[in-house]
Amino acid sequence: MKTRFALISALVVVALMIVHAADVTGKWTSTFETQVGQQVYTFDFVVKGSTLTGDIKGSLLGDSKVENGKVDGQKITFAENGSFMGMPLHLEYVGEMTSADEIKFTRNIEGVGSEDLVARRVK
Image (cartoon, rainbow, N blue to C red; front, side, top):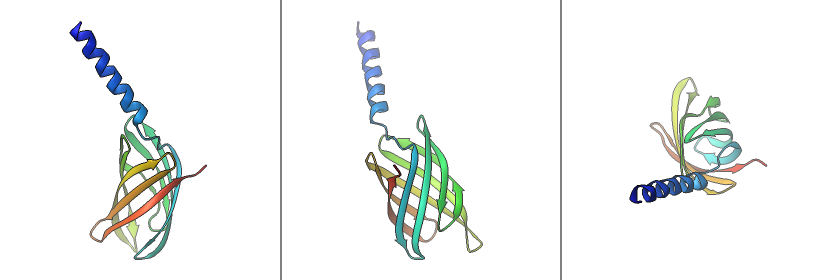
């Protein structure tokens, strides 16, 4: 009886985690100001389980891939690698889904600082 209760409880917890996971799959856009001017980004995210992949098209680094992407509940993390003015640049994104159509991100730019941005779902 106790084993059955534990199994049912575990299944309920897993089901709740799946229901509450962020639905990030799809196209998102963001326009924001930075130290090097206005940036326009498009993110095309794909989620499989807790793994986030996809493509990024942005003003700063051009076309790049989502790297080391993860979705944990409403939290989204990934990296972007490219080059700016001939120098390699690594950006780390940490975000939280604030609604079904909005993600608030902070992106840390290696050796430079951080920037806040909001991505909105393309409908």
